[in-house]
Amino acid sequence: MKESLHATTLRRLFRRIVIGTIALPMPLGLVIACSSAESTADDAGADANSAGACRALDVADAPRGCGSKAAFSVSLAGDLSTCGDGGALSSETCRELCGESVRSCTRTGSTLACEPFPCAVDGRRYSGLDDRAAPNARDIGSYLSRMAFFEAASVDAFAILERDLGALGAPKSLVQGCRDAKRDEARHAQMASSLATTYGGTPPAPVLHAQAHRDLETLAIENAVEGCVRETFGVLIGMWQSVAAPNAELRAFFGAITNDELRHAALSARIDAWARTALSPAAIARLDAATEEALVALEASLRVSEPVSGLGIPSAGQALELFSGWRAARKGTGISDGALGESVAA
Image (tube, rainbow, N blue to C red; front, side, top):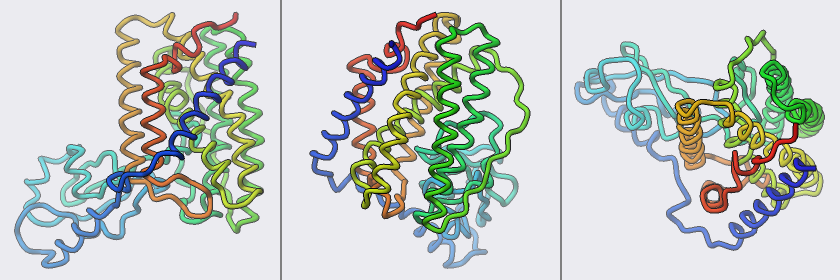
């Protein structure tokens, strides 16, 4: 079958990347420390109400790294005009005020709303997903509880994708692939929930709200961002954990899930290839731009990641090496997105 061949190709490629990364010495420059938040807070603490450049007062208490809530707020002091005129601020200003773990921020008066990067391996999100119930990943139990939440959310993501592909007249193989992936994700959610409980976690369940049908371009962009970029890179992290996790139970858990996620990554590539055959050149340009933006955001999130210990998660430096090898393979071999799924059976 075409799909199994695609997954096999991905597996071989990803094994080369993981093995190559393990063999590489980690340059000290890649061990990224998140120190800007503390220094900003120290400076502000000297005289919180004095004049001077705009600065954040309480960023030291803000959540850092992936796994934070959807947004957090900090109070500003000093000359607020140096923080911009209000509204969305530049990414550089956001990182200076909120800390390196944020992707965007918005100022309203003297309050700054900061949006952190999502976790690289949070599963397949979808537009409208309410992730406020997902716990922060601080220890093994909460990490696995968060994982259970997003595995369950992935069931909904594939259900919506299955519905919309069918409505758009996609090949039956793609619709069936979503149906199969939905069953995989339900099993993953059960596995993660059970293991989370073993480690003292309390997995919450996501709530699915009614979702309107999407047009092809909207579907293609979400599939590229969530499937071709985030979910596919998550396979590399899972492969690493299946080797590096500290006990046999965790290694078997990550290995079993990764085997399924390889098929999901291949499915995402096939959906991408099919969508591109029906999109206009302008729409394809927007799709490419969204994919590139997702890659940039993913790399930035890896630089500020704070891995939970005891799970075999790669360090920031190791994750960046994995990302570098994967991105080079996307550009150099053509084993990515459309090229991987160049032939889709009807």
